[in-house]
Each structure stands twice: as structure tokens, then as C-alpha cells.
Amino acid sequence: MASNGNGTTTVIRNGTLIDATGAEATHNEAVVIEGNRIRSVGGLPPDVNLEDRDNVQTIDASGQWIMPGLIDGHCHLSFGFPVMTGVASAKGTNSPEFSSLRAARNLGTILRSGVTSVAAPGGTWFIDVALRDAVQAGLIEGPRINCAGRFIVTYGSIADDEPSWVGSPEHKLGKLCNTRDEMITEVRRQHKHGVNFIKIADSTYGQTQTFSREELTAVVDEAHRRNCPVTIHSRGAGSTRDAALAGMDWILHADLAEEADLDAVAEAGSRLMPSATFLWRAVELGEQFGRPQNEIDNIRRHAEGTARVLQRSRELGIKILCGTDSGNSTPMPYGELHANEAEILVKYGGYTPMEAIQSITKENAYVIGLEGELGTLEEGKLADIIMLDSDPLADITVLQGGKHLTNVMKDGQLVNLATGDDNFLPFQQVGF
Ligand SMILES: [Zn+2]
Image (tube, rainbow, N blue to C red; front, top):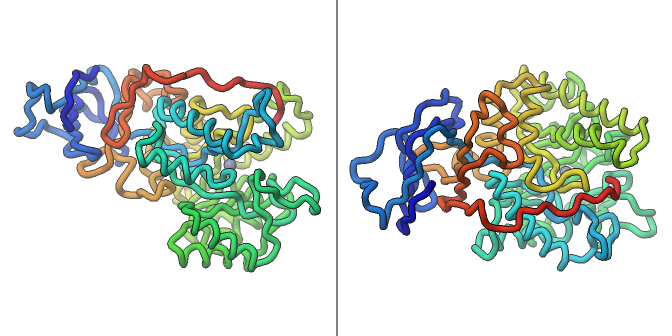
């Protein structure tokens, strides 16, 4: 464990280093961290004096594995699930103040499970923007956050679940935009309020394509002109192909994409984030949550679709990102599932454990807006590091739920794993 140094240098000795560059795991002599960056990896620099306890903190990682902090590329922070007894709710919590406080508390749970960064592709109000800023300012404890605002939706999209005369009230996840001009105005409005990227959303299960390619292109062009990336909820084949042709930066799901659609994705250079964790979880727990068998069967078909997409993407060289959809509904609690997608890559996609680790660290840095700066343990990179008492290359599931963590470092600072309220929010069976 860490000795009590007050200085800004931390040295991690011994252990096995998985640097996530693709290099083989090796014995670690010293990872040296200064401020919030990795100063060196390899030998101990001659000017670092381990006896200087006032300025140098040493962590002995003998018998442990050292790797970059996990990144969940798809985690919703402010949907307001699970619905809590005694709190006014619609489908989620409908008070921005309550939702903000609750999300702030959940951030600690996420961080202490070894997740040092999350991308939040959609939330309510601009809560996620405030969470990001509060973490950055040191006001609250939490992972790095890169976030979108409300989903841009149109009639028939996911989250357009009120009658047309109700529209999309402020507490809804989706913001209805029924003309190209409305879509562009919403991109500008969200960008003005500080989102890192735009989230647009097609139909829930790809049963219909709700946006035309021209509309997708208009949204992407407007956002890109403001240096703002765009992602899409797209389970359908047509919507996935058109998203790629429109220049979407990364595509969520793509469950029903066929060969030709994936060829278009590969050619366009879009990245894919299947986020199959939610689907397999829904298959597993659907009955318990009262879902009818035909619906569970349909979700299973989608989960199996993501397996095909993963396998074919690997052959085509499409970059696969790791996201779970944690926080999107009651069965997706924080702190438990953020690394489950890495297991899915191995179990269903034919990826090696090392490839899955690279996806959830190095590749996912892209959706945090820090590609090349985060997600590998190399000289000069941001110091987000976890240590484990079990080998994730031998069993990828040891990354899940924080059960094997011995240390978590974010931005050069050790996280106190012993503090905080680690009780997960009540798991209520209110459906999803
Ligand atoms: Zn989602």
C-alpha cells in the first residue's frame, strides 16, 4: 500500500505491467508519476530517491497487475434510474435538482470500481455538463466525463414516447426536432451550453429508420463545423449505413447491420460501440422484470446480432469501442457492469483479452476526446491507473465490479477506495 508522502511523485514498483499499447505484459520495475502525468515507465530514474518520503510516495505492486484506468464509453449519468420510492418521477426522476444530486453521488461509485473516465451519450437537461465541470473543478469526486446533451430525436425515434400533443417535455431524454432547421438549431443550442459531442437517436430497436441521410448529414456538418463530434443510437441496418455515409464519428449498437452496411462503416472510418452489455443483461433479467417472452426473444436476436457485428468488424478492421449503457435503466446499476463489454468482446466477438483491454482503455480515449493522451501507460500520458490482485489477461471478468482492485489512480491522485458510501442504490423491480 501507499506510504504517506505528501510530494507529487508516486512510484509504482514491481507487479506486471499491461501498458495497453499492444505490447506483451511485462515485469514492472517502476512507473513514475509526477503531477497528473506519467513521467516514465521502465527503470527507476536516478534522480528519484525512494527514501525521500516527504516527496516520493511508493506503492509496492508485487503480485499485482498494473493497467490503465477503465473507460466506459457509454454510461448515462442523469436518466434518473432506478425510480426511487417517494420521489416524483415520470419514466425517470423529473427534478433536475434531485437528479443532479443523485448523479453526483453515483460518480463516486463509478470511480471506485476502477472506471476513471466515462462518456455520457445523452442525459437530461445539462446535468452531465455540470457534473463534468464539478469534477474538473475538484468540487466532487468522480471519473473524467465527456458528454452529450439530450438526444436529438424525431417522431418514431427512441425516447419519443409521448403522444404528439405532449411532445418532449424538459425532463425527457429526447428533444423532438421535426425539421432540418430545428435539428441544426438544437445542435447550436447544445453546443452553446457546453456539450462535448452531439447524440442523435434513431428508433428503439431499428424497426424503422426515423432520420433521412440528408438530415443526418446536416446534423453532422453543423456539429463538425463547431469541432463537435456526433454519435447516433442506431440499431437498424439502413440507419447504420446512412450514419456512416453522413460521417458520424461513432455509431452506437448497429445490431442489425449486414455485410454491406459494415463495409460502408469500414470505408467511412466510423467507429462502432455495440454496447451489448445492456442487451445480454435484459435477456438475463427480462423475465424477472416482467417482460413478455416474445420481447425477450427479440432482445436476444439483437444481442446475437451484435456478436456477428463484432466478429465481422474485427475482420474489416473497424475500431470497436467499449460501452455498456450503464445507468440507462433499473437493471444497469453503477459500479457493477462497466467492464462487462470487454468480456463480451472476448466471449462473443473473438477478441483476445489484450484486444479487449485495449478497447476499454486506449481505443475508448477517443470518446473522451483524449485519443493519444489517455488510455495507455507510457511516458507523458495522463496518469489514470488501476492495480488488480488478479490477471485480467487470464480472466477478463476480474475487471468487473471493482472486486479485484487494490488501487485506483485518476489524474495522478490515488482514490481512497475505503471511503464513500458504497451501497448501491436500491434495486427496485420497476421495469425497464
Ligand atoms: Zn444509451
